[in-house]
Amino acid sequence: MQVVIDENEQRRRYLNGEPADHQMWIRGDIGAGRTSEQRHRLMLGIAMVASLRYNDTIAKINDAWFFAERLLYVDWIDERPLP
Image 1 (cartoon, helix red, strand yellow):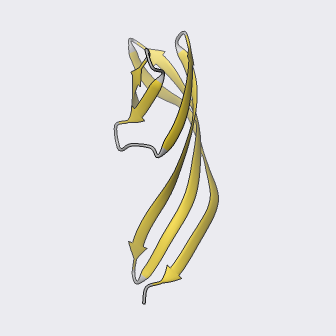
Image 2: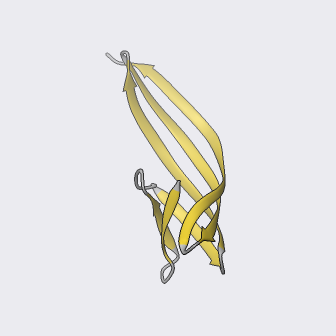
């Protein structure tokens, strides 16, 4: 997946959506980032909220940024039946 980088402000967004909270560090053609977000879903009469974190490593190849590694951590999940 390609990543869009604003090198002047060292911020990024993914092409498939905006992260809730993120930090990015860039040095040369390598970068690292941490993203935290909460996901909200309604599924089959259940409301679900999950707290997620991503630890990313990105690399610049031919003037475009790509994920080199992405680790997903689930901090917690809350599921409740809808009334």
